[in-house]
Image 1: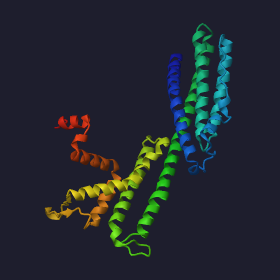
Image 2 (image 1 turned 30 degrees about the vertical axis):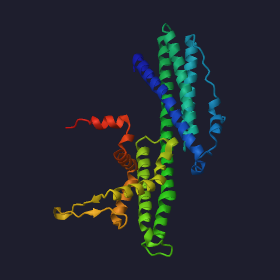
Image 3 (image 1 turned 90 degrees about the vertical axis):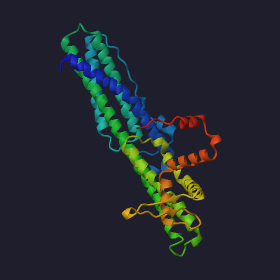
Image 4 (image 1 turned 135 degrees about the vertical axis):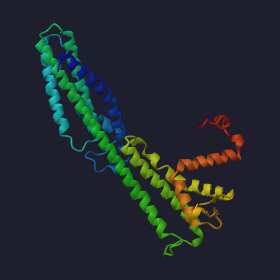
Amino acid sequence: MKDTEIEAEVSSIRLQVHKDIPSLRAEAYKILEHVTRHPDRFKDWSQPAESFKDWQSQPAESKEQVVIQHVRTAEDLTKFADAAVAKARDYGDLTVRITNGTPRDVLNTTRRAGILLADTEEIMSGYNSLKEADPAILSQALSSALTVVATARDQILAADGIVKNLKEDIGRKELNYLLRLCLLPTAIIYLVFHPALNLPFSLPSEYRLIWEVLFWSLFGAISISIISIGDDVTGDKFDPRHVDKYYYRIPVTPFVSFVLLFFLSLIGVAVSPTQAGGTSSVLQLSLTEPDFPVIIVLSFLFGFFGKRSLEVLDQAWQRIFPMTRSKEDIRASSNPPNGN
């Protein structure tokens, strides 16, 4: 490569490393926050989940200081570049030895990348200020700068891989938590006490309506939570600090389902499924003489589409009490969007 091409490559990598270091460190602290809030779920990690302050204050490579040696002569430049290349080689060896990465490994790896980035800046500063020196020395210094900054990029790539693995691990643990502590107990309780199964612990048959609405809405809420975690983890949208958003809908869903079913039965909603031959039968939604398959399906849907269920309640409220609508609602209803 020509010197101009090497300069351009060094500059490009420098900018990318400088951009990635803060974002990766921010992701590491997000993971640390989640681990310290739920230490019981991470006992199998290679390092204990200590308090957040302890993580930040642990003695490690964090105590290493970046010593800036101002390059004044070609000899200084050569010595500094050789030392930086040796340091980059040592850092590369440290990164290769990481097996089960932890958040602290991310912080140390990005810190090493920052040190190498500072060394690259110093080499390039000396290179630019010694344009009249021996071209061979300058060319060698430029090659050293490329080696150092490329190692910094490797540190960033390693840290990024660790972050992705940690997020996937957290996502798997949350999925396991939902399956083991939410879905499985809910299913067992539903079957053991089900009013229609006539088991030793079955409830009286008059409780079946409440039982079906309660548990099928819970099944719907748990199902969408499991799907949401999987989608967020695979789509790189998973934020470990906010895993509670996958759980909040679960205890709320049965209340919303009961209210919606009561409201729909009150206003006399009927379900008319189309059968073979184009005929249809009307299934009247009633809570006094409930059609349990319809109740089960609606309860599951209310739980699965929790946000839409809340929107239905909001629209019902606005229809019953139009004076409570906000100015934005009134403006939106008076100026509907144009459609084709």
